[in-house]
Every structure is written in structure tokens, then in C-alpha cells.
Amino acid sequence: MYCNMCGLCCRRLVVPRVGFRQMREFIGRYPFMKLVDTTLAGHTEIPVFACTLLVPADGGLFICSSHVTRPDFCRAYPDPRDTNLPQGCSMRA
Ligand code: SF4
Ligand code: SF4
Image (tube, rainbow, N blue to C red; front, side, top):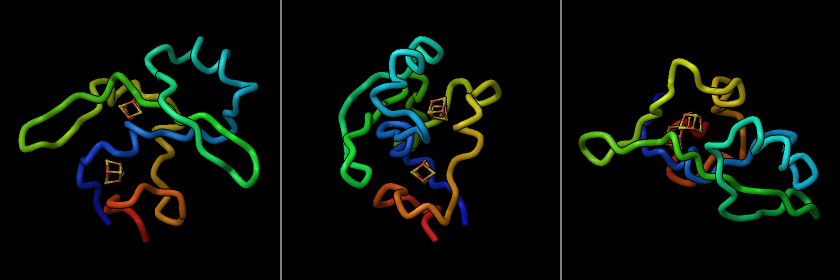
């Protein structure tokens, strides 16, 4: 299992336990996260973020410009058992 550095997960990010009710506090704490879309979790609409700390690298790859100090929810990601990993993610089980 390896990460192919496609950057998809940082361009369309659903953060555990962050819904629209928690969004103001979340953005206040992580201002580099931008709301770009919504999606459904069951019947509930939840926010989808893009991270502005993601930067292009050689060969069409993407890297985190803040890898050492990235948030905990990024450190915990990805879980290969997560069925919501993006299509094309090489970490999908
Ligand atoms: S902080 Fe880094 S790992 Fe986390 S979403 Fe942004 S670019 Fe991705
Ligand atoms: S979507 Fe998967 S393969 Fe692509 S950068 Fe994220 S973890 Fe790596």
C-alpha cells in the first residue's frame, strides 16, 4: 500500500466530525481550508474542503507544504479501510 501523491484527498477533503455546525470554528482554526463543495453523509449534507497548503511537485505530483506541522486529522489519514477514499487513491484496500 503506497500513496501515489495524486493530491486528490487534499483537494476534496471531508473532515471527520466537521459538519456545517462546526465549520466556523474549523475554518477559524485551519484558515488554509476552503469550502469547495458539499456531499451527503447518509441524509446529512456535509462540507467538502480543499487545502491551500497542497502544492504541485515534479512529475504532476502534489505535496503538502506543511507536512511536518500538518493537522492531526491529516496524520490519521488515510485509513485504507475507509470506503470513502477518492476514486484513484492508491491506498484504497
Ligand atoms: S495540511 Fe497537508 S496533508 Fe493536510 S490537507 Fe493540507 S496539504 Fe493535505
Ligand atoms: S488520494 Fe490517496 S493516493 Fe492520492 S494523495 Fe491522497 S492518500 Fe495519496
